[in-house]
Image 1 (cartoon, rainbow, N blue to C red):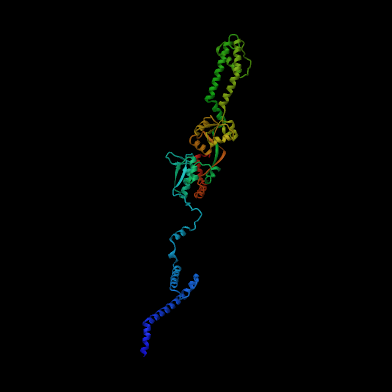
Image 2: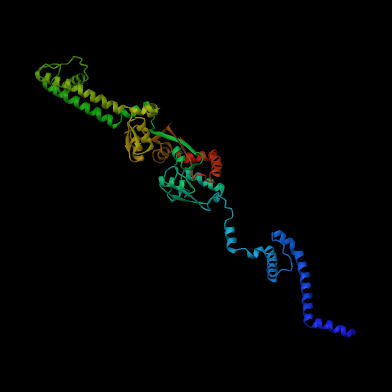
Length: 439
């Protein structure tokens, strides 16, 4: 009986009723799983702002809900997997950029480029083709002290200044004066030499010895001989005209010509003692012509004697710029000395070469040469020692320095070393070598 009741149940479980029961069990199991999952994901849904869905709705809605709930964790936990590579590159490219210019390497070149030019005694090539001079010697000592490696290149003055201003060379070492115009374009070191425009004058001995030398000079002796010959000629003519009728002029040739010479001399000088006078017509005509001619001759003779006996002791006669106004002054064409004389309104003669001007002064054909003092001293020491000297008078102040590019890192070490060098005794000895003891 019990078995009779069981078959109905079994039939229900295995038949159509059983299938219904199994479907119900599956629905109950699914519902439990759904509730458990809902409890787990409901906080996430609230966080995302998705409204809660009730269970028991249609299957499609549940399916989409499940897909959405599984997709959200994947997106939340692995965002980098969905990041766009292009967006990442653009973000990297948009990183902040420093607006300041990139810093350049302020260290000097491994081998410095030093510009120079022919400007003795500051820079010039010796017989071996090596650069030497005051500025060159100074730079060599600076480079040795600071461990600089360098090489020289030769440029013209304008090219040199432009190269320094543009930074194409590290320094310019030559006879470069420091001026306000150049300081606006480039930097200079401290001055290593101060000088200016000066005058080259002859060296003369004492006045007495110079006068004696002029008295026995060929020029003076020729003037005296010519005048004596003229006096004798006029005396002979007067003796020939007066010897027969005038007892003042004896007929004996020696005494007669002597009397004629005496008369011609006192007549020319307008002394006119009156002890001898012509009495014949011819003699008086000769005397009248000689009196008028004597006025002209005495003036010419006086000028010649003055020129021959003038002692050009210029060290005493020239002591200021105003003394040049009454002298024959020379200057180089286009030089600062010529410009200075023009600005001062002093008449001068232009010469193309300095050696020619110095030769003219040494020969007495000019009183002075106006030029840069260091260059004058060097040229005098090289070729006119004992003949010329530089008057210790600076007509216009000038200072010389080493030209550097603007903001050069070499300026500070150069200045520190330069000051120590020019304050040493060795520097004074160097200047004596190039400029002489009277620099």
